[in-house]
Image (tube, rainbow, N blue to C red):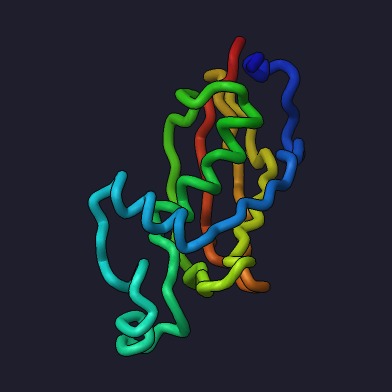
Length: 142
């Protein structure tokens, strides 16, 4: 994987949009890795009893999938200097063969003299924005 150079990026550069599948098995694996075994992420009966439409993906799982768009584009998983999002809707993951999808894209908002760029991300699932005010500061190769 080659690192993207700061000189090769301009304001308005679009990051390639990606779609990530999300299945219940992904949530179980994430729960094991993260230690977050909240039943809203794996137990349909419990999720519905607290007013959710179904099991939902972990917020940090959703956030991490969106960050993959940045790190894959930049060519370096350590390039993210700062990253913040607001969660606006859950990623609902039905228990079927399809599951859900998270579609993520981004655009360079600013190019800074310190070798960083600011990237604004969009993330949608089931027709709804699931992340808003999502932005990252990314250090690119000189």
